[in-house]
Length: 320
Image (tube, rainbow, N blue to C red; front, side, top):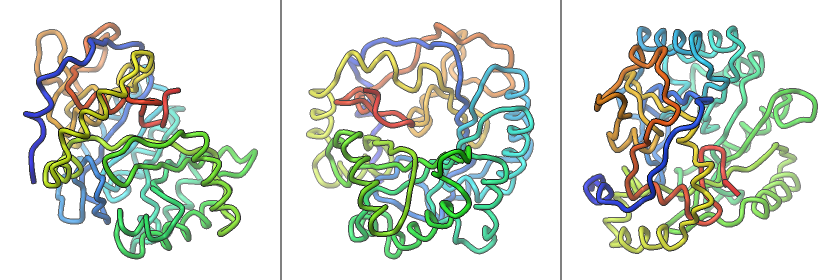
C-alpha cells in the first residue's frame, strides 16, 4: 500500500482551534467483514486490532466525568469488538446518546442475529453505509452481494421502527463517491435516495450524509496507483470554502483509537497525527480526564481540504 502522510503534511491549510467538546468518536478496531475500495481506515477481515476491555472501561470513565453528549462508535465493523454491547449499555445508562456506524451487512453475520434488536432496545442511532441505491454500483465499491444484504438489513431495521416517525430510532444513510470526485449536493441526492429506495424496496430513512473520500489509507493508495493523487488534491483545494471552517467536525469532536490514544479526528487517527496538548505529542484517555481543550489548536494537513471542499464534509454529512 502507498503511504500518503508524507504527501499531506506540507500544507497551507488554515489554522483552526477547538470549540466545546460534544462528541466522543471511538474506533473499536479495524477488523471488518467487508473490504471497501473507499475505506480510509484500510479495514478488513484480516485486521487484528481490537480495543481491550481495559480501554473500553477508560472510555466509559471519560464519558462519566466529561460533558460529551454523544458517543459515536466506529471501526472497522465496531460490532465485532467483543465489548461493543457493554460499551453501548454503559453509555446509555449515563444518558449519553449513541451512534453506531454500521455497514449493514454485519447484521447478517453469524453471531450477530440479534444485533438489530439490541440496537433498537437501547435506542442506538444507526448511521448506515450505502454508497448508492443501485446494486451494481454498491457491489463494485463494497463487494459482491453487499447491496442485497444491505437492503434486507434496512428492511429489518425499518421493521423494528428505525426511520419511522415517533419511534426515537433514527436511521441515517451515508454516501461516498465511487472515485476521485466530490459528493453531489446532499439535499438533492437525499431526495433521490428516498424516492428510489422507497419505490423499489419500501425502505424509509431519516437523512442522508454525503462524505468526501479522504486521500489516505486504501483510497489514498488507490489514487497514487492510478496517478490521480495530485489531481484529486487540486480538486479539493480549488473547491475550498472558508465558511466551512466554522463547522468542521474536529472542532467539537475527539477521536479515540483502539489503543486509547486521542486524535483531533478519525482521519488524523489514520495518519498517526495525534492530539497535541500541553507540549505532549501523544495523549491518552486517562490524561484527557479533566483536561480543558477549548481553544486548543487542531493538527492539520492537506487532507483537511476534504472537509472544506464544496458543500463541506463531516461525519454528519455536508456542512452547508
